[in-house]
Image (cartoon, rainbow, N blue to C red; front, side, top):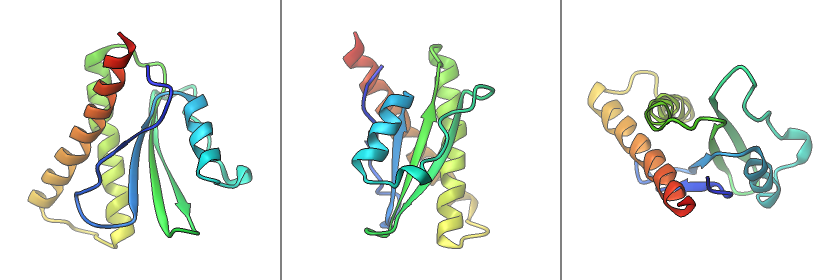
Amino acid sequence: MTKNVKWIDRSLYDAPFCIGLCLSERAFKAELKKLKVPRETWPEWVSPVHDAHVVTVSQESTRTKLCFVCVDGVSDGEAMLGILVHEATHVWQAICEDMGEDEPSSEFEAYALQKISQGLISAWLSGSKKKK
């Protein structure tokens, strides 16, 4: 398991929206600290009743939105792939909300979900390879 947040390429569209995969609470908190997110605004890590969730944090100084895909305690590869695609959907929903896009075309949505999912899977795989 990687100890750092793995940021994925955001070339879906040019916007101040960064997407990162975070596989540990320690890495999540370290990244929030590194990014100077005020501690009192830190979101909760993954709830004990869930395997994953998406956290969006606004960086007011840079006018950037940080979208953390937080996954905890998933060791099965197939389950992880499913979770990453599921969470990519929530990332896409956050991006649409940020753009004010209520009804994106189905093709735009499909490409976006593919791009976000591939980025998350690639980040996960690159961290898994370092582990071996």
